[in-house]
Length: 252
Image 1 (cartoon, rainbow, N blue to C red):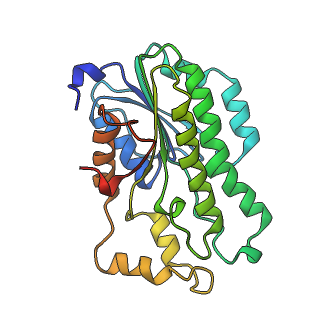
Image 2 (image 1 turned 30 degrees about the vertical axis):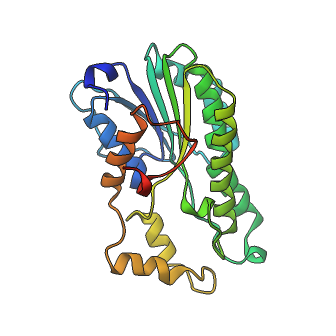
């Protein structure tokens, strides 16, 4: 890990920072002296600035293309990045819905999932690359999933959207953009609201439900704060970006 002085000019953007892994990432970044801009549909009620850090948050519905487009047309992203020389973007916000057989999925729910899970991170990544063009070190982190690499019955849309993030990282890595690294990271099975949502789904809609229930019963779920700490160690290291795809569980 680089020392703290090396990252004194880091500013990070985290989507979905109000709960789960996104909340843990925002807290961990602030604890390391890194300024954070949180983007989410609602504001975090208790997350505050720490030490010399700056914490900003914007209420932005990342499942709404019009809202995303309007926000990106302004200068809020450029203003937050400012003259920072190291800038990571964490595309964390996402949804597991719709869950169920392919022919029972509501088209509107499919569209919202694709916007939140794919369109939003790709749009933000493009805008981020432009807004941080002056920075000496730019890093894009897609929060992927094992579901993007292994198919699950009843989870076609989620699997497809996470696979899209993986392939986006692979393609962007080939572009050889100046001072830009990208990686799509599967964080493993975390003890979050998303996992609770899966366990609450009817078995006929999600045949793998019992496997996820077993993870909870046996204590196999990772706490988001542990995952966030390990992820930051990796993302802020020289190893990040060497391969466009990674699984947090397989990292040293």
